[in-house]
Length: 331
Ligand SMILES: NC(=O)c1ccc[n+]([C@@H]2O[C@H](COP(=O)([O-])OP(=O)(O)OC[C@H]3O[C@@H](n4cnc5c(N)ncnc54)[C@H](OP(=O)(O)O)[C@@H]3O)[C@@H](O)[C@H]2O)c1
Image (tube, rainbow, N blue to C red; front, side):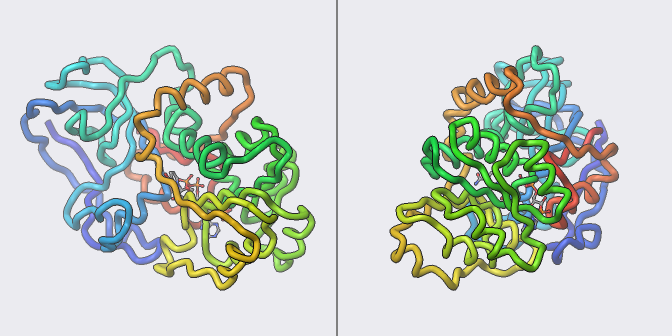
């Protein structure tokens, strides 16, 4: 069986993905024991995967090798299986390939059979997926947000951030979001119900942050210079939940906060967290998130691109701010 797939031919520079990742064709090998073949219906675009495209060996995951297919979360139908628990016709989510067809070891790929009663299958990439788990964990566990506290979230109009601000509100906190541009900020306040939104692209970032009157929790997706502005506006005994550092991913810079001494001055706790560490609790987290989704309390706009051949355009949005909500490619 033949498949088209995106092959990593070189390490991309910045957002020049087309110079480094090529749509290629191959014949799939025979299915080995434990493997499944998935006809991909959707690909999830996730900013964290940008780190796998660098040659850094000190990340939380080793880099993908040049010459290999690009990897990411996929959703689709099992069309062949030699793995126990997976049958033809099952709808599954797994770490597969950016391809028409993913062939994976079901266990290694974290494949799970999805409940077909969920009406909008895109939710398995949004509130019921890795972004939902991450947002819930970061707000409730790492950030330890309490009712009445003020929670600030960066990249708040993106997939993870939108869920984080909504979950903070659901848990009784006052949620503020940081996003790039007035339209995204309007959406956060008028569409999502944030207490306030801060446009980091305006030249008065500090003044906008001051208006919130201090933060107890900072759910940080971005790092970089914004973190310095926030460090000087944290309340004493505040918590910084380090979810991601998207400002570093395409620039090649490394966040090195100038205002680091505020961790001591304000007695802050700074802690990173990583969703595979709590994947074993996925079922419990999903049930909680599903309750909010079904009650209409947790929403997600989707930014959908059609066609495998257009994947790189969809991917670039994560690093240029072209998206509101979850970026998905439909095949
Ligand atoms: N720790 C974990 O387990 C885990 C799991 C999932 C995701 N994450 C992290 O969550 C973050 C969001 O990922 P996502 O996949 O949900 O993507 P996303 O938020 O849907 O998209 C990324 C957003 O980041 C913003 N951004 C890009 N470059 C920026 C910069 N230089 N400065 C400020 N904002 C910038 C853009 O919005 P603007 O228009 O606002 O700039 C863009 O829309 C990433 O840092 C990712 O690594 C972590």
